[in-house]
Image (cartoon, rainbow, N blue to C red; front, side, top):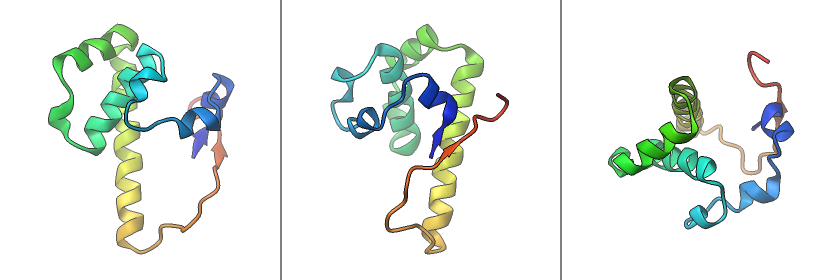
Length: 102
């Protein structure tokens, strides 16, 4: 799923496809900070270091960090529910939806 505001801000599918190990060399400092947070939420929460937190605070307000955290957490939870119910699609097209509150 992609929010229309992300597309309007320049998100391209080619960029999404480059999110892999070593993404730090591919993305801006702000994008890398958000991806490090995402990795910690999805993987090992202990992997988020003080340096990662400092990078988040350098690029995002407290409200934005909360929004990022909740957004990733909600998408992760929904994916787990779908997998447990056997409802995950084999091939899922990208769905573009309006950004909430915009």
